[in-house]
Amino acid sequence: MGFPPSEKSMPRRQFLSLATWAIGGLIGLAYAIPGVAYLISPALQKASEKNWIPLGSTSKVELGTPTLFRANIERRSGWIVNQEEISVYVLTEDGRDFIAMSNVCTHLGCRVRWIADEDRFFCPCHNGQFDRQGNVISGPPPHALDRYEVRVEGDEMQVLGG
Amino acid sequence: MTTNVMDWLDERVGWRAIWTMIFLRKIPKVNWLYTLGSATLFVAVNQIVTGILLTIYYVPTPDHAYDSVQYITTQLPAGWLIRGLHHWGASAMVVLAVIHMLRVIFYGSYKFPREMTWFTGVGLLLVVLGFGFTGYLLPWDQKAFWATTVGTRIAQVTPLIGDSILKLLRGGSDLSAVTLARFYGGHVWFLPVALMGLVSIHLYLIIRIGISAVPHRGE
Image 1: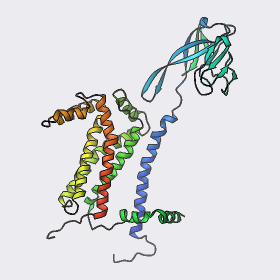
Image 2 (image 1 turned 180 degrees about the vertical axis):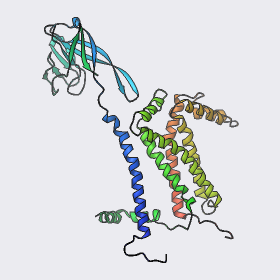
Image 3 (image 1 turned 45 degrees about the horizontal axis):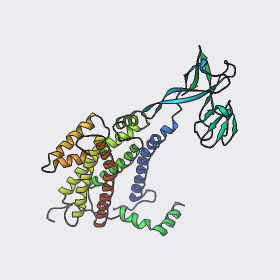
Image 4 (image 1 turned 30 degrees about the vertical axis):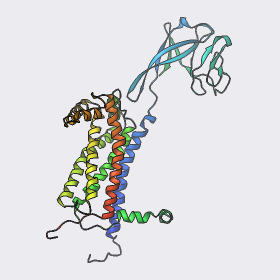
């Protein structure tokens, strides 16, 4: 009261206002930083590790025509562990080298089917068509069907996925 | 620069008058006990922020409630912190609201012309207790389940309408998925709406009437 504020010193009111803003800002950050980390964390999760998935016996693959195999995999999302089925088309021309293709259309993710009569994969959603090796014949798909890495253990085929 | 933007905005929306009315209003010389209401409001904001964050992952069904809470607590970065702030904030709300009420009682601040501020405050205390009661069930662990079993059975003791209250609270005669869902709905929709409404009136009245001074002998 008695002393007028000196030239250098900050008026009490201004100091308190500044301190309020500073403390408020710190509290805001203390919420914002953990909050953002908490919100974006599932988006930053790396894809689960890949494993060799057994598909079945090589003797079941027909020569020269894509043969459908199904395999069950375990997928973890959040707090839920799901059993999911993946479908893989396997093609071999000579019984020794195998190509394993995903049945997921490269356009927008529908499932393709092998139509033996027309000798091509067909996607029902937007008429995407692929040849027996998965290359695009016609329609909107931007590239060939995705392939899995294949290995043969004994007579069992395995693909790398997860 | 900032001043220019603020001036531009003020010319169009008149925020400075509102700012002054709310934050730069004149108050009598009071003591620290007069900050308890603001402290309660601060914790309420904490509950709103952390509560909204929790809804991003929490799922109110018997299948998922417990697991989703465990996921929040153990798997997500700062999930333990956000859940912890909400958990402890809930207790702090009740404690702060009650001692704020005691200050109002002991200083006689509930008297004319502040009766409506008092009434909305009583409503707010009930809303806070409602939040506590409904929120306690949501983790869906043993403590939650049995506390709500007991809590709803206490309501059943009410003469004449006790059974109806129990069924209304549980959504049937048993504590079930229906109970969990309605407690969740109550916790995140009904009670927050009531809280916002009552807080708005409570604050409007405080600003309109001004806070009471510390009473002195002989006044």
